[in-house]
Image (cartoon, rainbow, N blue to C red; front, side, top):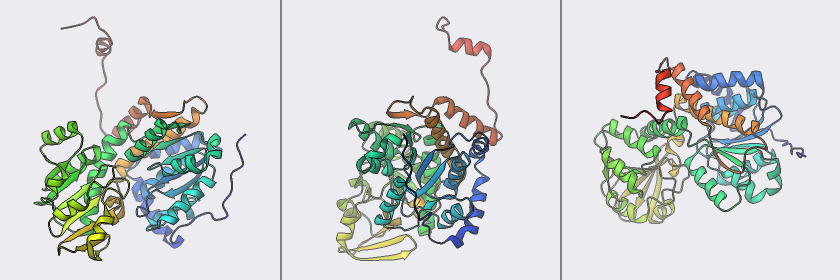
Length: 427
């Protein structure tokens, strides 16, 4: 039997409901670039595939996320939204979701760690059947602190590389006792969101925070996964000289053959003007690297958590820390040099800019919406563990996106289908 959910007296916690009109205007603007999710939303409104489902989404509260939340509510879900990052919330969007769409939102830009943790527990008080997670914090807290609620959980979806790493660790430890859909590795997600979305939005955040000219600068990109590939590609396209640091030899070769210099961070530290971490790991830039950097070097992060840059070590060497522009802090060091940190070491594309463009999030959130539907339809049939987004879902999202872009592609002829399914024909 599913327990009756604990209802919260507080229906929302946002900065200012008076911001709703601006938020609604911006949500509607983003919708122009999200035709795939719009079609899913229209079908959901008719079919109600999530009727009676209690759902919690822990996401960056942006104009694009708003369309996912609206689609889930239209599908019949009893949905609640919290922020997945303290600096990524767009306060006007949070207000509009409450006022205009009746969705409970607990998210304030700049919220402290205690507020974030409280919001995670408010989300779990909703007693979710489905969790949409971005970094695995809600799921990890559920497993660690709310085991009594596990029987009510149908499953979870995960948006990020970092979250998938955590889910794999949970599976290896034997505590992943429910199905989790790996949305991050869907082709229509990571090939586009991670590469083109992160590439463009990261540089957008850097430029908004600093107004710096990238042409002629040396940009060090730490990590050459799909996010690193996109960041390096876009930085190079704007005239920067790009250095890549890696720990994976295959990715190192790939970066070299893509035309970038590849070296350890210990060597790159003295050469870079701008440093961007996109690894998902801890302390990629450390005290010894800060010591080697040029005076005025700019450091930022576009990985999920704010641990990639060792800010504690930097603060320990600082004699003064001051904000020189919005989301831009200058650390004056004992040596006399300075290091500039953007967005407090958090996701620079969301802290200092607006995150990924709507057109690319259209596919990512289409994956999220359809993954939730897949979990609900597969209730009791899917085994505990990590599941891929079904290939047919990936293909349908790509088909709808091409259609919306006015692009046609070829189809196999009957002869070609017969050939590729046969082993008898040779050279």
